[in-house]
Image (cartoon, rainbow, N blue to C red; front, side, top):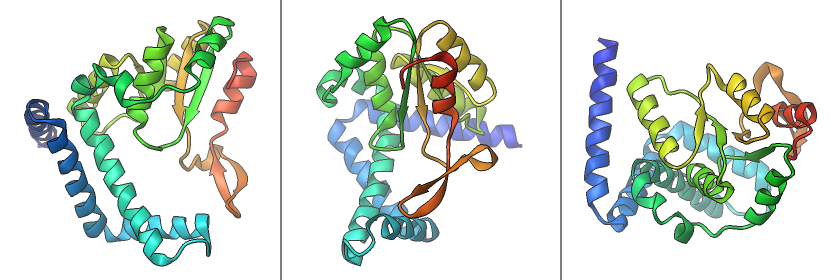
Length: 228
């Protein structure tokens, strides 16, 4: 039964992808805004978490109405990132026009030093397209860590999308092995390391709160003497 549900969800997703690939980009972004606005109003609990974090970050600098606008925009941005992943083949051909490259010459120079490279980002903007742009700029193998989806069909689909954009994916189960292999081969890896690190965390002050921070990027940089 579970496998049937996974398969049906995958078929639905592929059907949506097929339609979006045929339609103008403006329609896709309009759909993303609609989905983001809907999620903002429907997912009330998560919205309160977003607002709580914004209050921690901005304190009394912003009024409640301004924080509400930022929260709503964050939902729209997440929806847009999801839609952009679905239509990635269409966007990838225009990647240099969509993203303004900055510091890519530095990335290329660091790779030429032959020590590998560790790139770290948070869930800011579209991290999928950021990874694609970085892979394009490097013109070299770029391995990214990714959480595996519970639906194996969708997981393989998303992995293919990332492969098409020049990224080699290190899924949850084999992540460390593949990341270590890439660094041993003096290649670049990409990590999105802004979530709760749990028991393995280093606890640091962040906006006046003790945050469970990922130590992995720094540990890898020290172990392999790779620039971070």
